[in-house]
Length: 231
Image (tube, rainbow, N blue to C red; front, side):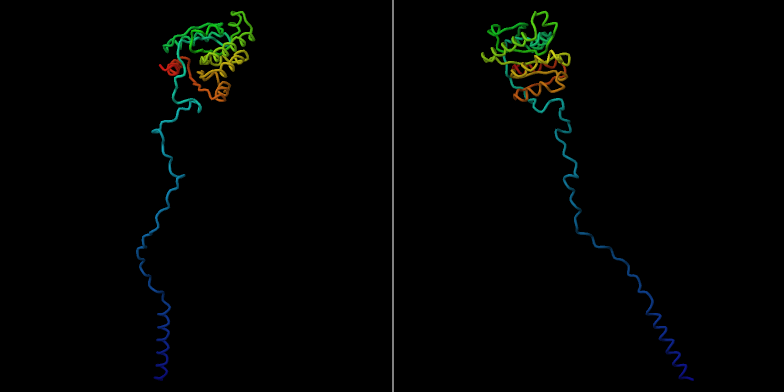
């Protein structure tokens, strides 16, 4: 009997030991994770905001790329003014030149002989059927007169300044016949921007490498003229 009790007691102890071995291991408190030594990825150049130029002042979008930023003095007075197309814009040119302090004279039907006393020829491009009628000439005759004057000026090394100051009112079938010759022959041009929305004058001038200046209003031409004449 004692032997049986000893066997049962030994069996119970084995069961107790087995139960203890099946208990889960105690959780180890987590230690602070080691600090990462990897540096954060460097922001790429594309992700960085672009550096501002010119102190955040937007560039002047009104000037075409080929328009010179500095105006070189190309002309001197006195100046002969005539229109290419007999428009009334010769008076506008006279006003701008006078305000700029440039001695000038307007001769509507100027010819080669009229160039003798002048050092610059200003061609004001723009046709007028009324002006042609008052002058008693046809379009072909006016075109011939202007070309003869251009040839004479070039023969005498007299520089030519072309103006188109009439805006859209000096564009159309008639005016567009007189504009190309003036723009093609000139040493510089001043153009009221709205008159060249199709870029016709710009294309001629850029093809020839001729400096040109867009203005928004006629009165702005005075400052450009001053610079072109070294005033």
